[in-house]
Amino acid sequence: AGTFRPAGCTACDTPERVRELLAGPDGSVCLQAYNYLAPRFQAGKGGVALAVRQGLGVAATSPLLGGFLADALPEEARTVFRETGDSRGPAAWALGWVWDDAAVAAAIVDMHSLRELEDNLRSADGVPPEGLTGEERETVRRARAALDAKKPVPCTECHGCGCPAGVEIPAVLAAYNAAHVFGEVPPDHAYG
Image (cartoon, rainbow, N blue to C red):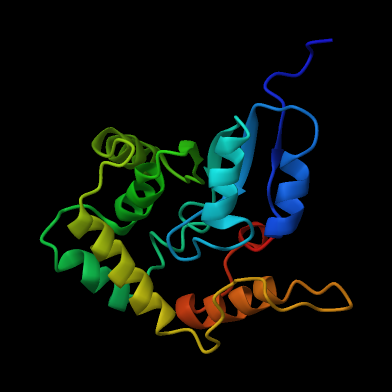
């Protein structure tokens, strides 16, 4: 009846389930959890690419992991960003990584103040799709490596493990690791 536009899906599930969703009825948008700390979490980068191949626009959700890649970022990762001499803060680096992916049409960011909104809008002006330099991408990779080094369980979130009871093992390990990295578990929506 044309009541809902645009139609789409949210991809808070395993890569296999996301493929099933995307093979379903026609839609125009896919919401996908996507950030530099866990680029393969849930459907991840592959799911983003698949959605685009299916003709869907992609809106990245949790690009700041509920604010943890901004305000709660551990000193080890902050140091990586500061060492560049660039004045961007951690949130701008995290959003820049998401916006650098030409497959991402929009980022859905939790903001708690007018200042955060203004900062994020300024960040959006600075990074066109595929606009990060190789050096900037390497900086984000080094920040992720600094965060990964704090994780007690070296899970790559490849989804190669399986649980006969249906426990989403990568999500459980991601939450456990995040508690160690950030001192608390980010919001559940970050882990599906």
